[in-house]
Length: 278
Ligand code: NDP
Image 1 (cartoon, rainbow, N blue to C red):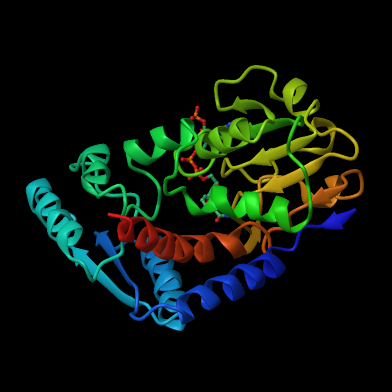
Image 2 (cartoon, protein in one colour; image 1 turned 45 degrees about the vertical axis):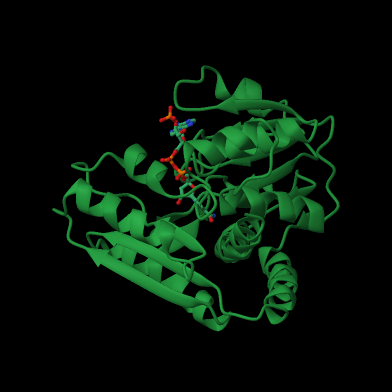
C-alpha cells in the first residue's frame, strides 16, 4: 500500500507556483467576501489569508453582516469585477439563506471566479474548454499525476455530487477518458457500486461511511471528507480497516486537504493569466 501524501503534492505545487509568481512584475490580488461570521468560515478564511500572505498576494477580506441586502452584495461584486488590482474573487460559503447563492456566485466574472463555481466555468468544464476549476478537484487530479496514477479507462466511482467536489470531478474524469459513476444520498445499493471501483473518490461528510466490505481489493481511494469525531479529524472512509487491502489511499489529515488551498491560490495566478489574454 502506498500512502498518497498530500504534503508532498502541496510542496511541489507551491514550488511551481512560487516560480511563476517570481516572474511577475506585480503582486496578485485575492478578495474574499465573507457574509456573516460563523466559526468555520472564520477558520477557512484565515487559512486562505495565511497562505495568500506567504505567497505575497494582496489579500483582502470584505466582511458583510448576515442581513446585508442582495443588491449591495451584487454591486460590490460588480466593483471587484472592474478592479484591475483584483485577480480573484471568492465568496466564502455558505452564505445566509436570504441571499440567492446561485445569483450571487454567477455575478462574479468567470475569469475571476477562483472557486470555479459560476455556471459559466462549470459549463466550460463539462465542454472541456479552458476555465477555472474548483481547487479540491484540481488537487485530486494533481495527486493522481504526482503518484503516476493513470485514470484513463479506469472505472471511477465518486460518492458525493457537490458543485465543489463531486460534479467537477465527474467532468474532469470523463474528459480524461475514465468511466465515471456519480453516487449520492439517493443512490441505491451504494456498496454494490463502490465495490466495483478501480478508483473510489469520496466527498460526503459522513465519518466512516465507506467500510472495508464496500471496496475492491487493490483499489485506489481518495478520501476528501473532513469530519471531527471525539475531537479527532477523520475522513469518510474507515481508514484503519481499509488501509491493508487497497493499493493507494489518501490519509485524513495530510491528504486532499493539504492541496485544496494551494490550488485555490494557484487559481488566482490562472485567473491572472486568463485576464491577461483579454
Ligand atoms: P455537500 O454537503 O455539498 O455534499 C455532500 C454530498 O454527499 C451530496 O451530494 C450528498 O448527496 C452526498 N451524500 C450525503 N450522504 C450520503 C450518503 N449516506 N451516501 C451517499 N452520498 C451521500 O459536501 P461537500 O462536497 O462540500 O463536502 C463533502 C465533504 O468533503 C465534507 O466533509 C467537507 O468537509 C469535505 N471537503 C473537503 C475539502 C478538502 O479540501 N479536503 C474541500 C471541500 C469539502 P445529495 O446530493 O443527494 O444530497
